[in-house]
Length: 340
Image: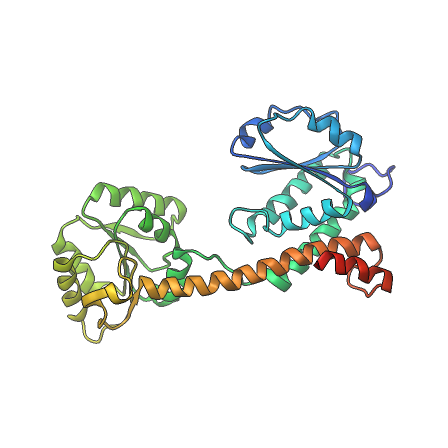
C-alpha cells in the first residue's frame, strides 16, 4: 500500500481496466480546461497526449463525452488496455520510438496522484506496480541499449571519446548542424558559419542545453576557419561540397602531423566525395547513412519484438498467476491467435 491512499477498496481486476487515449498537437492546451474531477480516474498528461485510466465502462463513456471532438481518441478495455499501457510506458507509442523519458513521467504522475490520495490509488496501486515491473522487464529484454537512430547520435558514436581530447570544429549552422550540435561531446565546440549571426544562434541553443560545455563562435572568415582546421581534434561538416574551400580545408587538416581525430562530412556522399575521398580519418555521408540504415533495421526488429512482448505480457496477466510461468493447452490457442 502506498502512503496517502484510502484502504477500503479492493484492487481492480484487469478485466475492469479501461483506458481513454486522447492525443494531438492541441492536447496540452486543452487538457487543463477539460473537467474530469468528478469521474474517478488517474490521468497522465504529456505535451502530445492524455492517457486516462478508469475502472468502469460507464465512467469511460462519461469522460469521453467531455473531450473535444477534434482530438484523436482511442479507448481500450481489459487485456488491450494493459497492453496499451505497456507500449506507452516502454516508449513504443512515442514519436521517438523507444525513448525512456515517458517512463519517468508516468512514475512521477503516479507519485503525485498517490500523494494527493487520488480516489483510485488503492485500487490501482497493485496494477501500477505490476506495470512498472513489466515495463522494466520488456525494456531490459528488447530495448536496452537501443539508442537513438539519428544523424546526431551517429556523429557522437563515431567520435566516441576523442572529442574530450580536444576541440571539435562544426562547420555550418543550418538544420543539419542544429540537429548534430547538441550531440557533440567535446572539450570545446567551435562553430564556423559564413553568417556569424546564425552561428551565434546555434551557440546559444547549445549553451542552453549544455551550460557546462564551452562553445566558441568563429568570425565567419575563411582564415579563421582554416586556423581552426589546424587546431581542432575533430571536424564535422554540415555544408555542401565547395571545390575551392574544400581544397584549402584539406590542406589545413593535413598540415598537422601526426593527424589525430576524424572528419565527418555530412555534405559528402560516396563517389561524390571527390577530393575528400583520400583524406585520412574521413567518414562520408554515405558511410554514415549506411550505419544509420543498418541500425534502423535492427531497431525495427527490436521494436517489433517489444510490441509483441507487450501483447503477450498483457495476455499472461489476464490468465492470472505469474506472468512468466507456463500455461495449459487452452492458453496456447490464445497465443496462436496473438501471433497470427
